[in-house]
Image 1 (cartoon, rainbow, N blue to C red):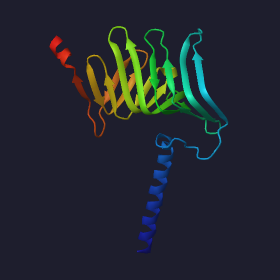
Image 2: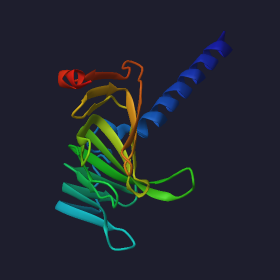
Image 3: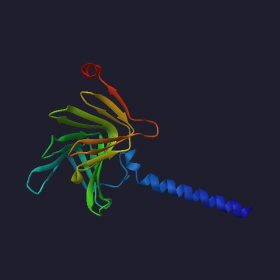
Image 4: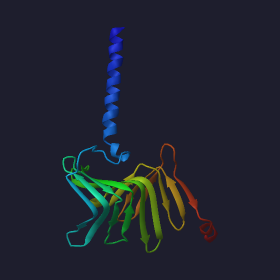
Length: 201
């Protein structure tokens, strides 16, 4: 009996450790300051960051009301970020949210890249010359500027001049504008077409 109790206790410890480890990796999604009371290495207000392509053209411009950089954690926190993502072939994307962060990560090809995570009331807009205004809204969005790619596993609403679509997640090729919508545990892909579009067809 004592051995059984020890075994159950070990299982509980393992479960708590697993929960703590997995929660720590995404704690900043729910908390505005994952660093706690640590002071940032760099702090600024009304900051504008720009990155340029090899030919000198604008790759992206990031505006933020405040910026806090923590070198040891390789983390930069943003308040009211606004990302303008330029594209040589298509119209630019303008993406904003209430909070955000920039981290370094290694992708599947082993290349270190920037990941811009936007959180809380994310709005993503592009004015397409042929298809008109497209707007996407979600509570979280991870953007990889170098690959012109974005994704979320949160509920998303996509609105166009044709109608609106709700989905449980989304992947976006930001260069071509191609969307891949997915169902979530509680939300299937659902499209509403505007009445005037039905009349036209």
